[in-house]
Amino acid sequence: MKLRPEMTSDALTRLKRARGQLNAVIDMMEDGQDCREALTQLAAVSKAVDRAGYKIIASGMRHCNTAREKGEAPEMTEEELEKLFLALA
Image (cartoon, rainbow, N blue to C red; front, side, top):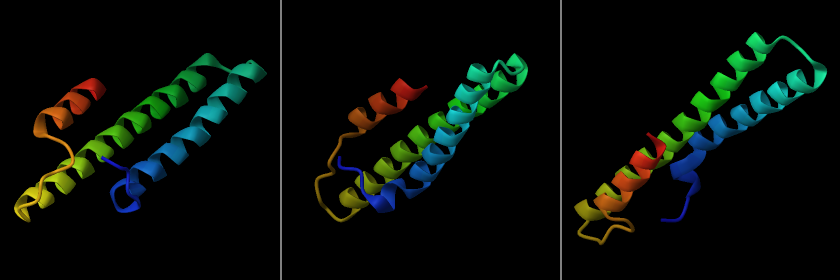
């Protein structure tokens, strides 16, 4: 399934925010700052990336469900979507 802007805008926003946080963590490490703050930020990056993935999966599920409701063949099967979801879990 191709990533479409209407399916990924929320995920993209989260990923851009995570990129900024990750850059901050790298700077903290390079500057020798406190590990607690760096790890807190790293945890936030991880959570943001995970949530972006779940947003993409949820959008894909909605997209495929809409296709089924219209009598069209979805781009991915439920099994393929489930496998992707479980890869994130």
